[in-house]
Amino acid sequence: MKQKLVSEKLQQLAIPGRVEFANGGGGLPLVKITTPWSAAEIYLHGAHVAGFQKNGEPPLLWMSAASQFAANKPIRGGVPVCFPWFGGREGLPAHGFARLTDWELVETTMLPDGGVSVRLQMPENAGGANAVRGKVEFIVTVNDKLTMELKVANTAAEPLNFEECLHTYFTVGDINDVSVTGLKGVAFLDKVGGTFHKVEADDAIRFSAETDRVYLDTTGAVEIHDAKLGRKIRVEKSGSASTVLWNPWVAKSKAMPDFGDEEFHRMVCVESGNVGQNKITLAPGKTSALKVVLHSQSC
Image (tube, rainbow, N blue to C red; front, side, top):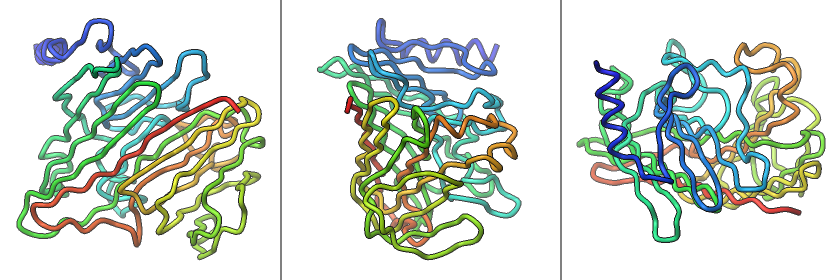
């Protein structure tokens, strides 16, 4: 009966020809969006954008064929919402509890240009003893580009400290033919084999081994150049001072149960957020907004 009531509530938010609902992987509720330019999919589990594809293009977002769609597990690929911490914490879920939480879909809107915007809200009791005393929303807008905005409002009487990151997985033709630009001269933490402080010396970053870097104090756009697919992806952001680059390469891919052994060839993560020394301290009554806009074009 509970599942039926949830389904009926979702159906009230459907928009004919634009927003519909289905059972996705593992039977998890899935929001399917169609616009004149593109299609997108969003799981309520984790407020997880699992797909975005422009008409006539390969998928922009990458999803692992080994992803384990289950209520107590994160979805592998797409755009996991890392909040209210990034990375590991002893005895707690990696990258926070937001991506393990079933979010509430509270609004769907058809925009004047034919695009669609949906607004999801994290339940107030999410995280149990680690719950955030505030209001957390995730707004996704779909048209000829994909726009995502994570908004956090501090409703408590004390400052609210948190990390956040939109851990975006991008589809590429072959990681060996990919370069990332826009980070030259930026200080970063190289987390492979330890944590090393470095400064990016390359105009175009290429991948030939495991890569796990946190670029700090950088607010600029980053571009992914994909020679095999003939595509350029532009990652524009606001309210973000950190950019993370990640590809697990061979050994780590084999060590992850929800990641195929050879899948690292077809993906790269360019993540936008506020982590480490860029974490957010939000005063009472204030709101923060982490916004990312993804564009793609042939090159």
